[in-house]
Amino acid sequence: MIKLTGYIDVPADRLRAVTAALPDHIALTRAEPGCLSFEVTPDESLEGRFLVAETFVDQVSFDGHQTRTKTSPWAQVTDGIARSYHITEIDD
Image 1 (spheres, rainbow, N blue to C red):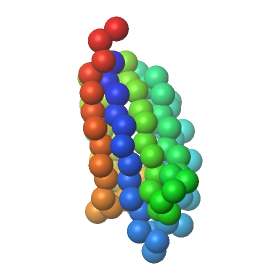
Image 2 (image 1 turned 180 degrees about the vertical axis):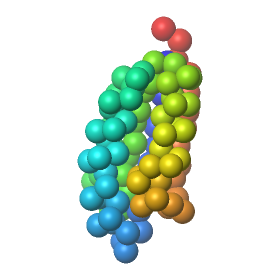
Image 3 (image 1 turned 90 degrees about the vertical axis):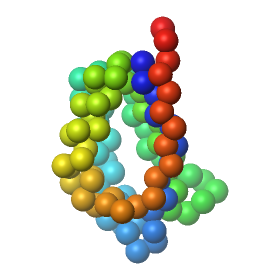
Image 4 (image 1 turned 45 degrees about the vertical axis):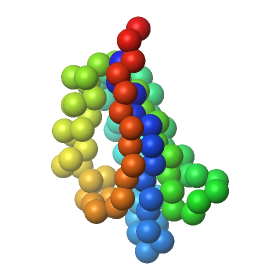
């Protein structure tokens, strides 16, 4: 399995657009083949930070997700926004 954890820091002037785009991004990702879990939640202690946790069944599924999102509306609305992610491979 592939697990990604981290966060995205959304500037105040883009928060409304990102928040509006988030439900579709979550729904599309959860519907992808190989997606086991996908959560994006506001950080209660830091305005504009969203915590990200996702798990995919394998590298191929994770790579498919990355490819899809590069040309998605989510990529457009979050273009240039700082992210900090850590990706690990988990053996069953």
